[in-house]
Length: 144
Image (cartoon, rainbow, N blue to C red):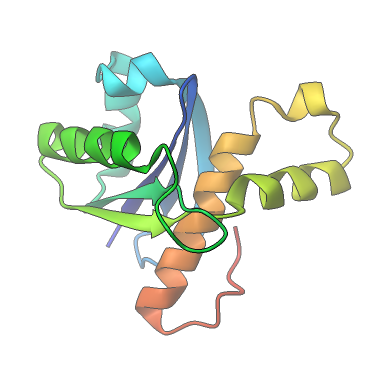
């Protein structure tokens, strides 16, 4: 089972994908939000290349575990994309995924400016990995 994950932001959307076994998540790309939401050729090419079985969308939550202020907008966009792609959609808690992605990139020596285009896809791979691990009974320490 291949899962395609989207970290939906106002300006950019991070894309990540799992391997065919549904075990390991990998970052793919960051695209302008308008391209993904408008089903542009570049986004459709990613979908065609990976042939996902499910769309996993990051669900913005507060630290207390409640839906954040962006949650309804993001979930509606995710449902619309899934419908357009003919895929089932699931939502994954994305709390702290961007902060963790920034921490990882800083450790690798990226400046704030250079990490800007990478944070969203790395965040998508982090919450996708957690989602995969929870489905597979893993311990949540999978690779991203």
